[in-house]
Length: 190
Image (tube, rainbow, N blue to C red; front, side, top):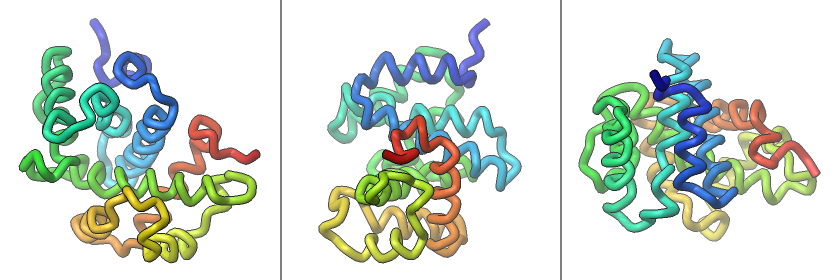
């Protein structure tokens, strides 16, 4: 029997639908942030990591709302993923109308955009090291609307608020998680 949450399984599914390295790395980043969040909350780190890794697996093939993540949800259901897992992924896109009813869903929403933003911050470092990115630098860049302009800053703020965390604490969490997988993200240094 296949373990739906095993990294080999989720990684194979991600790679089947996502060919671009950038979107794969985003999945790896959110996976790391979710695994770390599970450790903070008592959640199952394997399950939460799988949610993070697969949250955008359908995006490359179905980038337009509402296709993403609705098409992906159908694929996950067909592969036997439980509805709770599917709903957590659906809830990361506000336009689906699926409420974020548990910690896993709230954390996914909170770290998704922030992972991409922190990675963008690392890309402009002279050495491209995520470990060199400082919280105050991320906060400062969040105020610059032309930096990583596609990142939804309102969702980052909403995610921190929904978790009851100061934004700086959420940024600290994400930076630490990403530093732990820096090589896989291509952000370990030049």
